[in-house]
Image 1 (cartoon, each protein chain N blue to C red):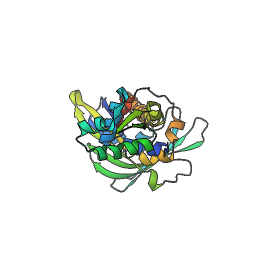
Image 2 (cartoon, one colour):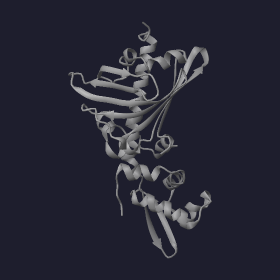
Image 3 (cartoon, chains in turn yellow, purple):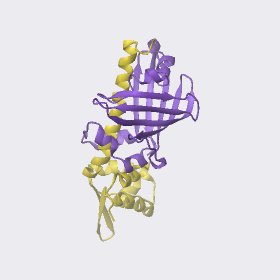
Image 4 (tube, rainbow over the protein chains, first blue to last red):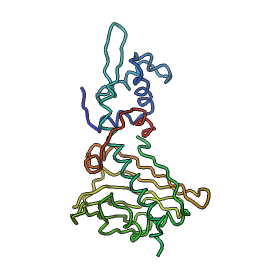
Length: 109
Length: 152
């Protein structure tokens, strides 16, 4: 089941192995075995991580015979990216204001 | 998500001065509001467990809430850790949307300070409130590389 929300997307990305998978899937579709390889992980372990990515709507899996091919829906990262970008922008702009205030010496009485 | 937002900035003033800019209510009031908004009042109880809050007004003088935080850790001139909530005008905080803001102050060449700001434990806030996305100018960079970088 796909529950697309910031919550499930952030949860899906809150893990090194899954972020690694997402980064590799940007370039191409990969099978579970190919995803498991560099992570030194069992098929079952990799499959579990893929399930979390599937639930968040980030990945879908096509099964043909024994091969499970995974494809990334990169556009579904957009809301999470937007949210982080805005949050980051908030702090960048606060630090700009802090710097301006210090340059003007407004903090010194 | 262990480290969601990390910003590093060199500010041309010594660590003591940059550290104080985060803790003196009158100084905080000069820069801690979003662009176009002003600070109505700030309160800082400078001790672990102390209250750290600011109230923001929009250009028309409407109370926009602001932030409510609790000081989790204070290391003079080196480090401030806050349990951070963005709040609306009712100033209600919800433990489910608590985040963590860490500020590190390191001496940099020429008497400057390297400030590192880390805002993490954002999952709960992201889930409950697209607040920031609604209130601050938007924009998606279009690359997952950047997202990966932010999340790394």
